[in-house]
Length: 365
Image (tube, rainbow, N blue to C red; front, side):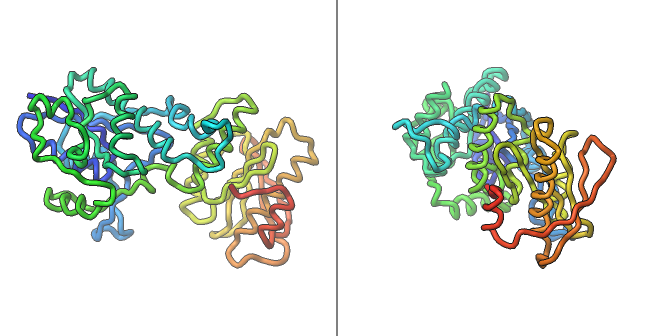
C-alpha cells in the first residue's frame, strides 16, 4: 500500500485535495499540519446551531471528522525569519521595494513548508506529498509552482490533486500509485468548481479563506513586518513572536525611534491584547466598558522622565482619539507599568485629525 503525507491547512482546498486521494485505492494518508506565527488556526465555522453563529473546531477536528486520517502537528516558529526574509531584501536592481512582495514571500513560505513536509515524509516512510495548491493562486503559474517544488528538493514528489492536469506528472502517477484520470485541472479562478466538488464529496463548504488563514495576506501586515525587521536589525535585537502578533492589530502606531502604541477598541481586541503585555510594557486605558486600551512599548531605560511623560501623553491622546463619539474636551486616562502595582491618571485632549498625529511624528502603519 502506498503512503502519502497531506500538507494540511484546514482550508477547503486542502480538505478536498486530501479527500480526492483518499478515494483512490490502496493509499494510506497521514495529515501534517504546520503552525507558524504567520498562520491562524481554523477555529470557527459558521453554524446555525450556535447562539453566536459559530462553533469552534480546530484543524485537528477537521482532519478527524472530514478526512479520518492520522494527524500530526508541528510548529515552525523557529523558522519564521526564513518565511519573511524577502520582506526586507533589496530588489534585483539594488533598490528597496516600496511594495510588500507578497508573491515572493508566498513562494518562499511554500518552499519552507515543502521542506518540512519532505522531511516528515521521509521519516514516516511515505511515498509522496499532497497539497491543496491551485495553479494561479497568489499569481503563481504552473511553471513557478514546479520550480519552487524543485528548489525545496521535492521534485516529482508533490501531488496537487486540484491542478494536477495542468502540471507535469509526478512520480506517484508515473509509478501507477495514483490514477491521473481522477485528478483535476482547476485554476484559482475555478473556486466555484472546487466548492461544487466539495459538495459532491460531502464536505462542508464553509471556506477558510487565505485572508483569515495567513496574516501576510492582510494589506497592512507586510509593510509593518518590513518596518519591524528593519528596526530589529538596527537595534541588533532578536525578533520575537510577541512583536509579530502585535502587527495584526488594526490600530498599530509607531513613533520614532522606538515607540510602539497598539490600541484595542472592542472587547475582542482588548481580550487579545491582554495576552501580549510584557513586564516592562506600559498599560493605558480609559474607564468604561467601551474605553480603549493601549499597550505602549519603548526602550524605557534609555528615556528621561520628561521623555517618558511625553510618550504617555501621546499614547493617552491616541487612545482617547478612538473613543466612540470622539470628545472635544479633556479625557482622563489611567496608566501603569506592568511590573508595578501603582496606577496613575493623566488628562489629555484627543487628536482631532490624522494631521495632528503626523505633527507629533506618530504614524499608523
